[in-house]
Amino acid sequence: MKQQQLEDIIESLETKLAFQDDTIEQLNLALQDQQQQLDTLQHQFKLIRAKLFDGDAGNAVAPQEQETPPPHY
Image 1 (cartoon, rainbow, N blue to C red):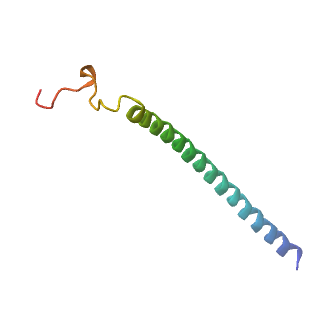
Image 2 (image 1 turned 45 degrees about the vertical axis):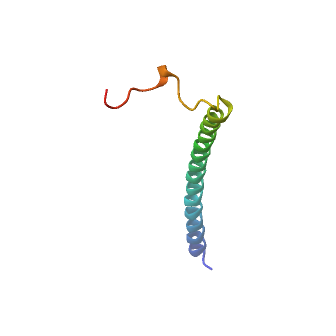
Image 3 (image 1 turned 90 degrees about the vertical axis):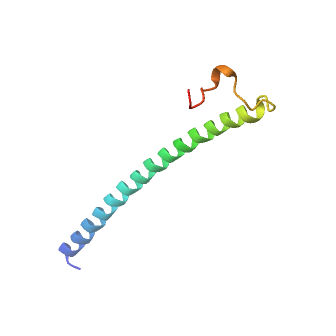
């Protein structure tokens, strides 16, 4: 192969590598964001579950001060 052909091949490979690095970084950021969202949802789920099952299971109605007025008021 000629010197110019080798340089063109190397330049093409370097360009592809740069795009792959950028894509990997974008995917990594998206994965981190999704993991953070998942952690938040798991925490919220634990709080809701604790409120439903660990609290007074016989009392499914909120206290009067937490109840909202009916829609006709």
